[in-house]
Length: 167
Image (cartoon, rainbow, N blue to C red):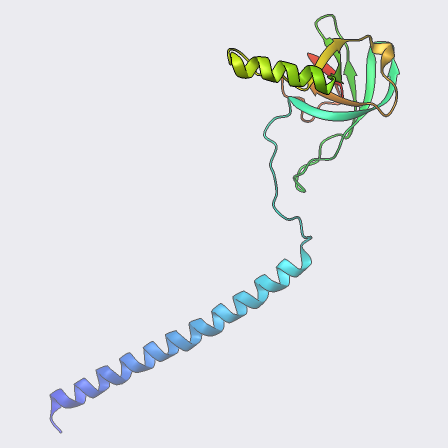
């Protein structure tokens, strides 16, 4: 054999050797990685899809007690399992707080309002409920509230509300 043929055989042998080693070695590494990831996933709790709450300015809560102008509430924990916010809080009813009770309208009245709006669709469409002002002492434990604040209260235990709506 001549020199060129020997060099060609050596180059091809090296290429096949390195290529095969890389291919089979990386497959083993990938397989080991996949086994490790499955092991880690099995240890993690199933949280489904995580909804991240960036700021908390409007939410629902339940009344625990009312003491003067302070409403003690309880609310669900954060939907993000990696974030913990207080579930028991105090809402202060200040001078600028609007306190309302949501009342469902009579179906006949609501149907009439819808018919009138359909003939002249100007402005906001009618809603099936109306809000009436109430006082703090009208709230009872167990009442569900819709609470709106002027700023983010995600991690605060005590804050003033802008609107409190008994639902």
